[in-house]
Image (cartoon, rainbow, N blue to C red; front, top):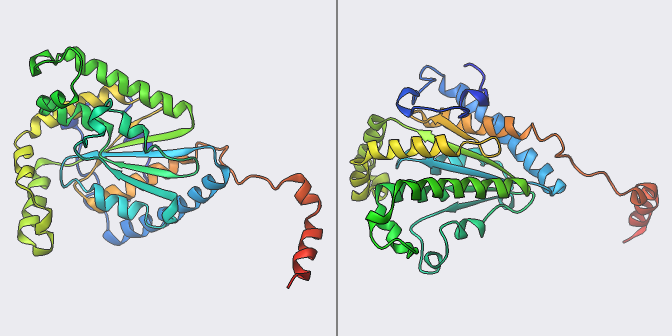
Length: 293
């Protein structure tokens, strides 16, 4: 299996999603994928330990994708070896009564990663330029000045909102948050097969929702809005990566490897040196401890 290079998946120019494959490694051996993922799982755990002691950066991983694209299982497998206190996962659903009384980014600010930790957004602030574009009536719940009906939601409204997202991401990255955004790019046919499995396999029945079928009917709209959002918000400071997701195991490995490779660019992340005064007296402290009961 060929090596994973982040730049092969990073959005650095305008993309057209229908031209990007949803499965690049169909012939990859399952055991090989599992072995490679296990190796990078351990390396990611190690870098988180170093980050914790360094205490200057937090890492925000944003996952977006259509229903059944594998976000939940990817989180479980990629961060499997982490200290449980080193990674926090937030799944954003419909805003609650408190959240809706603030601007749409407010609830995301509240759960940004602490220094030394990873935070994963399972769905993210991008729902505010994806789901709301497919269903603009949701914007009405925000009670915004000048927006009396859905007809007041112009194209400029969405342009402004995506620029606001860019500003939000620029602000947090300038203040110590390393940000990586992944779109799990799945084919419509693969989604159909996964939805069928939810109905056919009893243990997965609970995952099925009639809403999945309703949203599937808007597939083309979602792809259009994903493409536009990715093109307008992939930046040097907060890049998007389009991950072929028809093969769940391969998608997990690609995401894990990209996170590892990108973290290596931050060469200043190191275990702090011992305080000089402590180092000078280290033998004395050892003797003191050895003499204690």
